[in-house]
Amino acid sequence: MNKYVKISSPFIFLLSLILILVFKTVPSGKLWKNYTVICVPVNTDDSTVVKAINDCGIKNAVFQSGQYLPIPLAENSVELSMLKLNYNNPEYSYFNKRNAMFFDKANAYRLYYIPSKYNSESSALIRQLKGQGIDCIKDSSAEYPWLLPLIGILLSAMLFIFSKNKIPFLCGSLIPLLYLYGNPFYPVATATCLTMLCIFFISNLWRRKNMIITLLSRYSIPAMLGVAFIAAFSSSLSSGFLFLIAFIGTGSALTACYFVEDYFRNKKAFVPVYIRSSKRVSLFAGKVFASMNIVTGAALLFIVLIFVTSTDTIKTPSGKILFPAKSHINDSNLPQFEDFYRLYWNVKTYPYKSLNENEGQKDIVQYSSFIENAENGIITEQINTLKYDSSFKKDVYDGIDNLQFDSVEKVMKSEGEDFCGGYTATSSYQINIFGIIMCFICLFILLFIYFSIIIRKGIRK
Image (cartoon, rainbow, N blue to C red; front, side, top):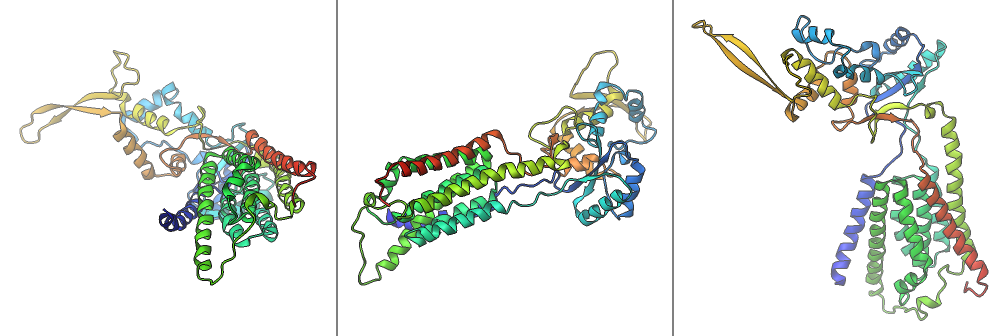
């Protein structure tokens, strides 16, 4: 059994390391993958903004006055004529939803979509517009919150100084620090504080008899791990599952460290053996108040930062504006691809629908066309069938790239076929109430351990 554990533990450690780095969740204030959004007050002259966009050398910008019919129709076609006659029908409401993409939810700002490759030009555009007295806002990627992983590294370094067995502590703390780097959110940061304290305990009882039993018998340690696990999930589902991977990876790192130590110990002529069991050794390596002050102080600092950074976000003008963007919940006022497919279907089939029967949203339309044989002059009837199915939708979706103007549909398509239109703010990370509660619970469990130590005067230091 030990043979398989020796072989598998390094691979599990490396796999965990790769998964955490590959699936990291770095906060960003950017609304669209391939576009930057510039917004100006709704009463701003549109031609002035468009001229400024062109003057800055920006190509393929998407704006309301540059939109045309997103369906390729001949100018004298029956489909186009029928569309003009029935433009205000509810089945063509997609056009109103399409226009909503160029305004914020409160209709206070008009939006312009600039391709991301013109990042420097968009900054020049803002300067030019502000120089003309136009108040404009740009959605931009939020700065990475370096304070969180930096505090985590400082916490680890200080516990490293106090730890009794430094190599196991170093091996065990590697993955939690990388996990915090890949998920720099406050509930994750406070969960990391509890995790680092547990690793500190493990390093102090390293290689002592019944180490695992002793750790589990101290109810505060399983409680800390449980609270840390819930705190990670309170940030997001992905952060929670990555915490589970980090937990497995940390266990594998400590296991690999154990066997590597064994390898070098067995090469020595004399190998010392610990006499005292883990029950008779201090979890804090004689540094009770110093280590608890460090960990509790780090958790408290993370909570203080929550309110400091949240206040900064509220003060940011763009943080108050709700922009159209890809969302988990669609908004009925914004266009969805299904709306676009239905519009395309209605325009294409309207001339062929029967006026004598109420067909509603029929997904199959048949119509006759008559073809004359060039050789014998015989005219034959041909039945044409139009079907609203996945093949039809795919053709419409693929045809977006062939539109002869910079359409808002191209912006939607840049997010993928699963685009779901909704409203969102530019703030990089929305802290939910559950996450804040879990941060306080992490702090309270540390304070509980801290005050328990103070009350128990006879604790071994």
